[in-house]
Image (cartoon, rainbow, N blue to C red):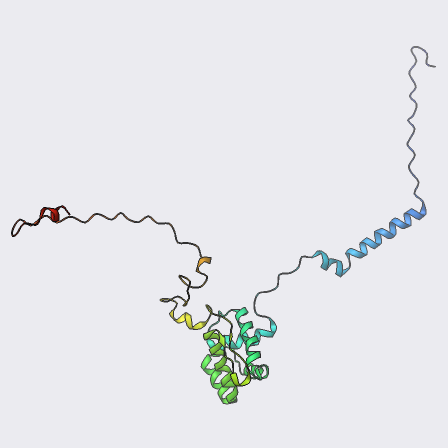
Length: 221
């Protein structure tokens, strides 16, 4: 009991009791922490978290040789890789021994080689390689791999608008088609909207003042 005039005594606040962690719970928590650290250091987990890389554009490794041969023998470096893959697949179907002869033709490639030089090297090496070289050129220019009725193969149409024969006349003629302005012309942006210039009326000639007068009805017209 406090007497008047005496200072009030302040009792110390009781500190809250902390929960006691058992040795078993501490070991379980440590094991979980180590397991998590090991998971994130695993290369497989890093691969799972890393975004998938975008595949590089261009022909597949199996088609790269045919693509390079096609670029050299046609003289065009901007050939479509997808079309090259389709032509190669069609030639593997229609041309006997294509895989073996393609390797032989690829062995004749030289850096910076021109089409005439490759054709001459193929002709000197084997007449069959010359035929294959010309068949590759024909396939790119016509968009069709020819078949052989005696061998039971049919011609395979691979490309139409991308056929190289249409490039030589592209400045004055569209690819022949029933569609206006070439195949898939509707994919392009429409032409800009324009306002035609007003056409001035043609002046009416004055009636003749000499000779036989024209009928009034004709003058009115």
